[in-house]
Length: 371
Image 1 (cartoon, rainbow, N blue to C red):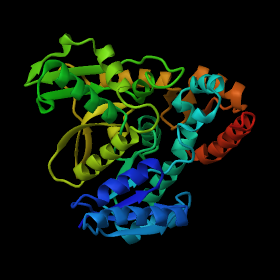
Image 2 (image 1 turned 90 degrees about the vertical axis):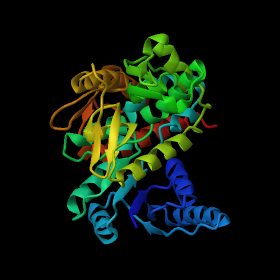
Image 3 (image 1 turned 180 degrees about the horizontal axis):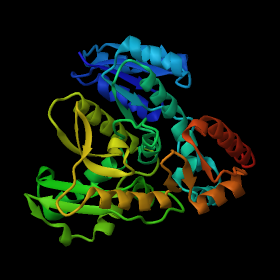
């Protein structure tokens, strides 16, 4: 039986666990979190739900502080997982929604990339542990993978693949096309190159429209020119409920990627950051890993340029070859003004320290606006 290490039992991690244990094909799961009491209760909750369906998968819980690289590497060596799923972050992206509307909108305009230290720090330490271990598992990173994976890739630490974002947009677009053209959804094939920026642009305050590439096929016929693709994307994204209900789709994206990475045959799908590339792509996934698969007429260089241009609108101007991450000017200025967080650039190895500084600064801001 395959074994999967699931790290982090927050919103997405809990959805993944709840969905997986109700699947008769559930692999052996080792669930890890730094909060032992909460983590064990969530495992019990998931197993109880599975037992209702007379399913009794093998699931164990291990307390883990992923910032302890040696401890994490030892755990990986003991458990020998085929796949590791990282759901651990220091601060969720939607925390700032708790602020008053005017303050939230001003801070939101810094974009999600502004919070990259909080999303990067834990998976950076995890990937150091994977490198230190004697195991070579595939790693699925759920934490802002459009930006995190490329940053880690500059250091030779890129996870195998990300999840969500492009893989949340694509199925909604497919359903919209099928409904509009009155064809079965399975007859529709989408090729979508798009950055996380497009997901938040219609949903969150202060974001800008980003470039994208889309090709729409129905029964092997190109029907792209039948659609205003920007409007199609906007409408498909806006069909999701407000808030974080879409994280169930993110969890489904993760599980699909997990099963794909355990199989010998290549699965065609969409996901962020194959091979540490920025943004989202059509990809093949298999136990051999992840590779982008682009339609005729679009080169990989062109696809990367689309997503790099989008990243600038998502707060990250560029990532240098030595791994230094440079904020876009507007992001730096907003963070400096609102949080007194004055860092124009940073390196992944400094992300934990900077994340703590950023969270402390945010808490001081939030304390001025008690709910």
